Image (cartoon, rainbow, N blue to C red; front, side):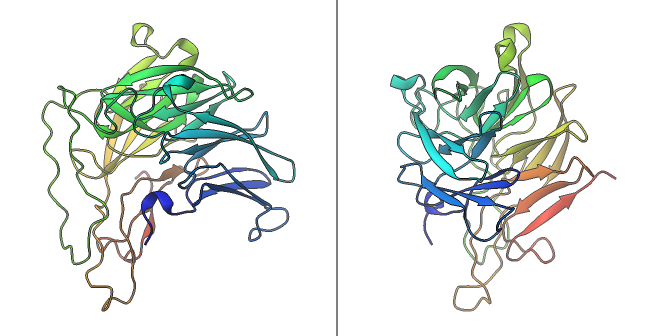
Length: 338
């Protein structure tokens, strides 16, 4: 099986009637749902050597911002789309010191803010060693020029997930939790785990956990602690994607590698504090070997989450495991309030 950075499809976003998906080989594909849900309308390459990863949509200018997180250096690409969903590559945005930000450990989830008319991108590490540095940032990108206009430092976490909440707030999720000395806590659940694994490893020990583990950043107000536009959200971290549900006013934060164990967190957007931790499953594959099992699967972390504003149900993609019924090849867990 190819490595994680070579696989696809990966990210998906939609602007009716168009559906956009990133793929392996640095490819971005569009589908026109008025024509076919099977046959791509258009396909372009961002010019990278690895898969295209997450993406965001600027509906005003009919633009996508697509992130190549695993290339060296990581970069973003502005791609325009037509009314029929045809794609045209516009501008490459290297995340380098020469271009405004020195990203030393990839680039992650982008988001579009209609209030400021800008894209924002989580940058896990800036000016770091290439994986363990505690200093990250959120970069601000002009959709028309591709310029990195500024970046907002977010320290003692490596920003990963990014989602727009009310009043121009961005919730920034972290993929790494640090202790107060700036040392990264070890992953709770290494992925992938092998077959014949009957129990997950013990949670990582991490004393004196530093804040924030997630953060609320308001770029329109400067995203700074001095005026309260950068707020620490302790209690949940070490995940990937995040989501804001306008139906219940909550952020949902994945945290598969949280020191307390694999969970997702519920953060209220009014008070900007953690209200609940919900346990999820470590990625324990079904027992067996490739020669004896009736199926072959990989394993991973519960890192992708979404919610419906219509019924406030929360949907979490789970890797193959034997802890949930009928989830031996992976499944979607559905959560609701009681």
